[in-house]
Length: 100
Image (cartoon, rainbow, N blue to C red; front, side, top):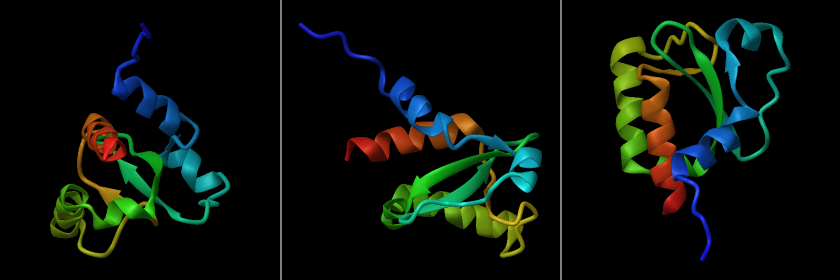
């Protein structure tokens, strides 16, 4: 019998390498791997996540993008795609999408 680690822990480990706060992202290398895109998420301090472009076709992710459009329009203050939600919401969503 194997011990299963909760999916949220796996997703956090996967995303940890791509995590940067907004200030760090402004001064760091902004290279995004082919087939991925960067998003900034958070309420007070924005954190940077690198996600696969396949998420753009998912209805649940498109809902977040619609919220971003309503709040920010197409002018994103971080220079990248900014999504107005808590970090936990994005992690939960990506963990569910990863299982598909």
